[in-house]
Every structure is written in C-alpha cells, then in structure tokens.
Amino acid sequence: MITQTEINDILNDKSPESVEALANAARQMTEQYFGRTISLYAPLYLSNYCSSQCTYCGFTSHNRINRIKLTSDQMHKEMSYIANTGIENILLLTGESPQSTPLSYLKEAVTIAKQYFPSISLEIYPMETEEYKELYFAGVDGVTIYQETYDKTRYKEVHIAGKKSDYDYRLSTPQRIAEAGIRHISLGILLGLSDVAYDLCALYSHLKKMENTFPGVEYSLSYPRLRKIKGQDFAICDIDDITFIKIICLTRTLFPRVGINLSTRENPLLRDHAISLGITKMSAGSTTCVGGYNLPISAAQDPQFDVEDTRSVREVVNMLKSKNYDPVLTDWRRIENQIS
Ligand code: SF4
Figure 1 (cartoon, helix red, strand yellow):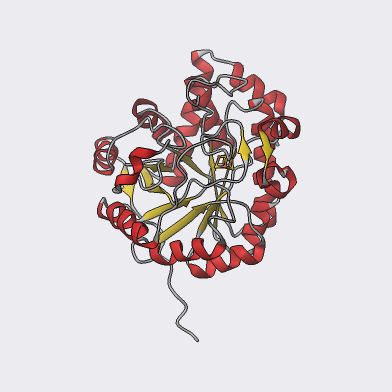
Figure 2 (cartoon, protein in one colour; figure 1 turned 180 degrees about the horizontal axis):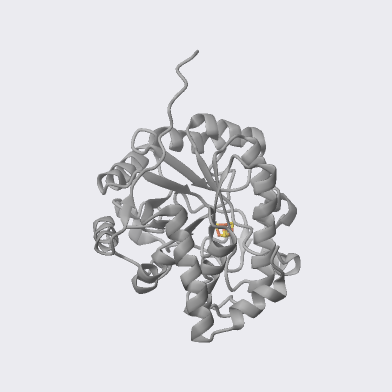
C-alpha cells in the first residue's frame, strides 16, 4: 500500500511532466474499466435539522437558521420535479438528527422515492446494522458516509458535540452498512480539514480493508473541498485545482475499479475537465436547500454549501454528449423478490 510520504511526494510534484504522466495513466485506466460513461444523480435534502456541532457546516445545531423537514406531500412534489428532469438515481440527505428524522421518517421517504427512482441512496446519520437492514428492505441500495478526517485530534477539534463527535462509531459505520446487505457504499474525506496526505493514506487503507472484508460491495470515493461559510474559512490547508485533479488521478491509478463522485461544489470548467481523469458519477441540476427544487420554502434558508455548477440536467447531458461520453441515468434496477 502507498505510504503517506509517497502520497506527499506525488502531490507536491507540480512539474508539468509529472502531472501529465499521472493524468495519462488515470485517463487510460478510466477508459479501460468504465468506458466513456458518466452516471448522473441528484441530491435531495429532506431536512436540515441537526443535533451535532461541526464547526465547518452551516447546518450545525447552534446556528440560528430556519429548520425545515419535508412533509410527504412535499417529498412527492420535489421527487416528481427531479424525476421529470430525467434523473433516475436519487441521493436523499438529512442533517444528523435521529429525533427529527427518525428511521420511520426515512423509511417513508424511501417508500415515496421508490415511486419515482430505480436507485435510491442515503446520506444520513450513522445507524446500527438492524436499522440499515430496515432501510435496505425499504428499497435503499446505497449509503454515503464520510469520515471527513481520519486525524483523531483534528476530528475532535471540528466535531464539537453530538453523535458525530464519536470518531470510532463513525469509523465503524461502513462495516455495519455492508453487514446489512446494502450493495453500494461511498466513503470520503473533506479536503482541507486536515493534512491531505495523511487523510488520503488512511482513506485508502480503510477502503482496502472494506474491499477485503466485503468484496461483494461496490465502493466509491468522494473528495468534497472545504468551503468558506459566510466568509469564515475553516480549512487548514488550501487544496488548489492541480492538487485536486492529482488526487482524482492518483485514486484512479491505485483503485482502477472504484467509483469516484464529483458534486456541483466544483465549477463547470473543472468538472468538465475531470470527467476523463477518473470521475464516474456526477450530480447535476442540484440544489443544497431543503425544498430547493420546486417549493417556495427554499428562499428562507441557507444551503449546506453553495452550488458552483448551476447547469441543468439537460445542459450536463449535452456537455457529456459533446465530449463523446454516454450519460448514464440508471445502471441499476432493483427486482423485488416475488416469492412470499
Ligand atoms: S456536517 Fe452533518 S452532522 Fe455536522 S453540522 Fe453539518 S449536517 Fe450536522
């Protein structure tokens, strides 16, 4: 396995020759294992209630923002709007508040989502295996859980209170998700929160361990970059565009088959450039407000982060086609077991 020092050396070498060599290797491997395809998905924020305190997030419990959670009627409106754009792969998100968005609420959301989307993923608070099993039987096929940083000291500094401050419980969450039978798990780190080489090295070994223990699960990785909130900067290091691209390329060369996701946090120019270098899945036409697609409530609240790529699904599809890529709206369909 690659060491922290080796990762550091690769990321710090900004010579055009080394960047080009890494990019070429990543481009070749991506085409070999994934062809010229990019899956598209849309995030849907169900709720911004949160009982944890993370210094870098606008939803943190002590922030005085309008707290909203969608009713079932509002879920139908938002989901039907998203489905009409052509998206078939939905990511349902909440803040981390089991009180406001309990398992029963999430199961209801998944049951509604099944009417509109063949593939349903969740980005919610960490749960027990039995709870994940209930979500699996309700129709969930993917769960996203980011460790944010693997540096325990830094983790404690930025996750001040609430369930998310429990480092070890979060670290063991992917295992509980896999034990529940969920087929797709997405891991990630928040770039800028801590030393990037340390975090990448730890993420890679976490992924390796998961692949060895649960080889039947599909894995993907995400690298959201830490953004300022209302002018306040929480990053301890700046991840510039070249470093960001190198992280994607390095990941592809080390893990040829792993999925790599890219959100609309990144600007259109960078997103368009990154697709040939390892990205396999992108969000499109996104909003990060609760009810932000089609409900009048969206104006009265802060988004979790600002969207940099504001293009519609249609515009992203057209961009992919113009680059000779196939936009994949769904590559997974759950067949219900008819045997009683
Ligand atoms: S990062 Fe998640 S847990 Fe932390 S404050 Fe934001 S929504 Fe809550």
